[in-house]
Image (cartoon, rainbow, N blue to C red):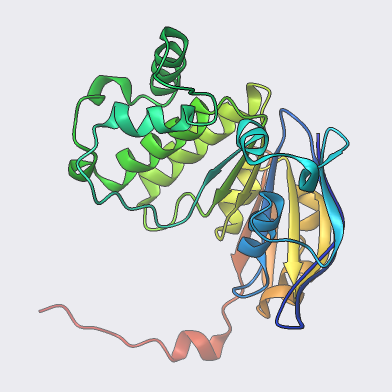
Length: 267
């Protein structure tokens, strides 16, 4: 289990996150939502020990992450960052093998190759394992980066907006993949902007506002009209979709907003 206890983070004496308390266990998918600039990425970076807290702690199975060596952290936590780019002509298999770095001492073993193949098969990237990464589409590259993370055999997977810059079909593809990973006994924490995608895929939601937790808990309870309007400053309606039993958020568009729309005549 991952626990964040009373976490406070700041830059140059300016508080960014205050009194953050969250937990996620294996098999769960926790979504981090909130308006821009509220500390979502900062929270992920502190969980991974990239940023040191001013106070509070991040615990993995009760052990403070600050007392772990980098290799131990890398064997526990895998990260899929935002806006991944590959500028060198590595093959897909080369990139996924990089996930084995915490374990490799010398050269790769048969076990390393077995784990890499399994990661590629789970992400449907094995069929193009010999392709050069710079030739991949955005959706393909994102699956490769997730495969690299799985090759670390982590207990916890952190993702920072894994569907940004992807069309809706690839968003669904990636989030279906991430959800299936969570079900395979991995704790998943993902920053996600699309509240409807968060509602459909996440077991729990942590909503940040002004560097603090506005709401934290079951998805249907956190994504309420009151919480969303407070955080995002727009009125919404929230309904339960019968076929999925998940909440769906509809922005309330006023008559004035509708009248301000520009009508474009077809050529």
